[in-house]
Length: 219
Ligand code: Z5A
Ligand code: MG
Image (cartoon, rainbow, N blue to C red; front, side, top):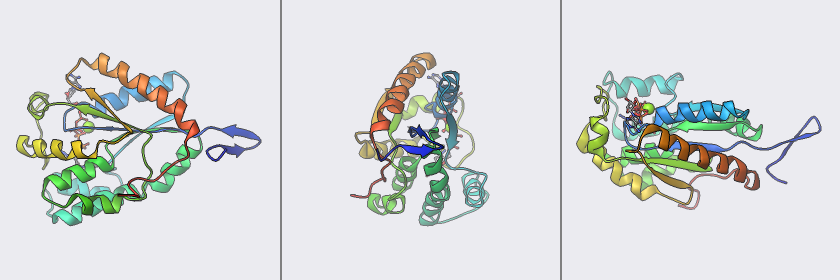
């Protein structure tokens, strides 16, 4: 079958691309960590990834912008976020094809929602994301912006403001597709964790029947 790789005579099943998305402070990083530990504990090959990846050259430029240490126009920072994903695309494909499940903290949906919330055209925002690997599962941690703002304090990064987050929430809703599972992020941590574990195991199991595909090629 198309999705199976033959290595030294034995078949390797592909890994799943699992993305966690949602407003700031909805619990993405917390839940990514818990999910990776759970999958590792079950003997599954898994890695934790995040975007932006602040360790690359583009990532350092993004980090400087987010911490208000540099200024870039909205289009430039949008394309940098996208490039930050593109520079990891081949590695991502290799890992998935070699059987590693990737649990990714933010992806193209953050890219489009945050830039569209600043007023950029949604179609324009989606364009540079086309052709990146489409997730098998997007877990959207759904929280009211007001509740998220009460969690820990917003820090000093550029987008951590209530009115802006409300706008981001509007654009996230537009991107919801068949791969999305929406979870109430105001529930206790453990309840959310259990729901994500179940969805992740289903996704790892069912992705074996699906070849890797590309994001938003038909949009
Ligand atoms: N951005 C963009 O514009 N374009 C792009 O393409 C991409 C990103 C990829 C970087 O974010 C910024 O870049 C971000 C979007 C933009 N904008 N902002 N601001 P980041 O991912 O580096 O941000 P972060 O620092 O990791 O924070 P976060 O993602 O906003 O938070 P989180 O990961 O969702 O939440 P958390 O750290 O897991 O939890 C937050 C607090 O809530 C913490 O005290 C937890 O203990 C608590 N928590 C978590 N879950 C619960 C529950 N269930 N109940 C109660 N308390 C909870
Ligand atoms: Mg986080």
